[in-house]
Image (cartoon, rainbow, N blue to C red; front, side):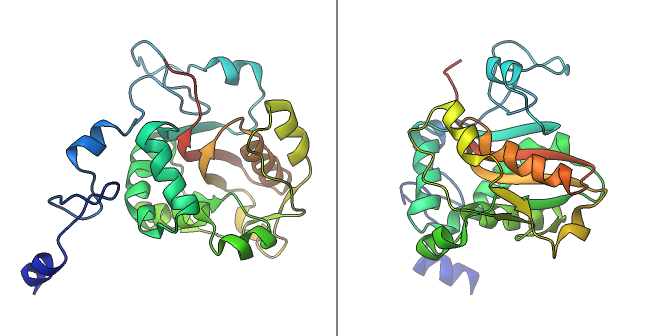
Length: 238
């Protein structure tokens, strides 16, 4: 039966749709054009850094100048080339099937950050934006990651208290100012985070304003500490 299904529905590259040997895979050219992050990275945001990884904590220029309330963070891809294409396909192209392979990449980079009894939660969308988009891509990533890591997932741990305009095109300071006091902990879920380590999941990190607002809300509600992981990071070329 499995062989028959493979003949009828052969596995395709998740990016270009060319034939590949296994499900949820990239073909050779697409893998080459996808900027996976590895080697020495910033311990707060996961952006790649020049040099060799010696196991010591090191920060990028942004994370040395901007206070990051979370403990540590990682990103799987750079937000460029095929990395940007995949993120936009998940976010705006109804490519919900990308959540599973993306979760595999997230699981690999976040492994050093995992804590006992960690609770995974997505960055929330405002309900009006959720109605328009029909799904929260960060929640899809968080759910798929939780299944792979066998950790608890709480999709509605955080809420957007008010709707903000799109952050696209805004500078760093404007992003932080717009997100001030916009995210809170769902009072019906607060008991789930008290005294626990939280892993926040988002699709893209640009300035870090959204992750900072989510982290501060979790810590104010009683979380032990907060870690972050994003599918992609907007960063300068190394």
